[in-house]
Structure formats: C-alpha cells, structure tokens
Image (tube, rainbow, N blue to C red; front, side, top):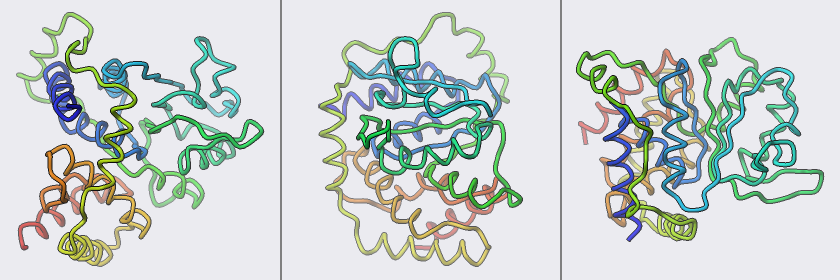
Length: 284
C-alpha cells in the first residue's frame, strides 16, 4: 500500500535530517498535491538534500536543479541544453535556486509552467512536472513590483528554514557520516503517485471546514494580510492531501494547521498568521 510506504519514507527522512520535520512534511504535501512551494533560507540547511532524497524514494523519478542568475534564459532550463538530458521540460521535480535573481522577463515566462505545467518550445507541450520548488535568501516585501509579487503568489506553500539552534540537534548533525539511502522496501512508483493523486481529489471537503476557512479569511483581512481567493481555493488540495496522509477520506480541523505557511506573503506576517489560526481553531 503506497500510504504505508509514504509514512516509511517520511519516517526515514525525519530520522536522517535533524529537526526538519516541518520542511519534510511541506515538501511531501506539495509533491502529492502537485502545488509549487518556496523555501526561504541561507544555503546549507538541507533544503536541496531533502528534495533529492525524496526523489531517490520513487522509481524512475527525475529531479532537475538549476541556479538562477540574471543572465539565465528559458532555454538554459531545457533538457536539450543540460548534461544528462534532464531539464524542466522532462523532470518530475524542479528546484530553482536563487529564484528571484532571475531576469523578470524570464521569470514571468515561467508562469505557464508554474500554473499549468505546460511549456512552449516553441509549440505548446504538456510536461510531466509535478512540482516546482524555488529557494532564495531573499523574501519579497511590500516594496516589490506587482509582477514579482504575482509570480511569488504562484508558490502555494512557503516556509522559512532556519539553522539548528539546539545543542542536541547540532550533536546529532555532527554524527551523520554517510549519505541518505532510502529503504528498499518503501520505494514508490510513478503509477502509485498518480493513483494517490486521484485518491486525494476524492477526499471530502465538509461544509464545516469551509466555514472555518471563511472565518480565517475574514480575520486575515482585518489584519491586512493578503491571501487571494485563488489561494484559498488551491489550499483545498493541501487539506485533502493532509487528510489522505492520515488515512482519512474527509478533511478535519487538524488539517488546517498544514496551511499556515500558505497564508502569509511577507515574513513580517508569519507570526501573526500563526497566532490567528491557532486562536480560530481553538475557538471552534
């Protein structure tokens, strides 16, 4: 059963990567819900490693990584221009590092890839891409141009990844002396991911959960935190994936905790959104 394997993979990743449970959970939710995600933080915090490690857990799964610069052209991301023949047009997961260092015209040309998983090369082509992950040290703020913030909005899940702070965690990190290897008995297949995605779409969204989401939407607006109607609609896929991972066929209140990282735009809003959602969920 693929759900058992998913839980084994999650446990293996949590056993190897120190204090990265929230990041691992977000990455897996993004992949299975087929939504894009943004990882914010300095280099060396295992963001890329976790994505590569998950890729090793799916047979015939292809991973593409590229570091963006202002001189990058869209053609640079294509398989024909990359060693190994893997590019954004034929991979399952794409990681674009230093995303906001790209030329705005190139970044905006990625919108069709981010939104619809299609590319024009030059003809319209549907690509097998499930999820685009972007990383950056930089966080958009209220001074950013409208076009850049519109692009940032296409990343449904966002997370700040912080350095380890606890001494015990640091000691665990120092004792890791071999690369991550997935358990042979927990490997997934592309077909299983496809079936799981279809099952996730069948998870029920109760009216009571919609009422809670509307209450959160009203509270967020009162605090002048921007979260578009499209964002709330797309978050249903994350809630359904969360319920699926619990082995449930219906979204419950506890699943809403997994969308906290989707309801802030600026880092200054992170704490207030967290407090708001916790308060709303405790009150019902």
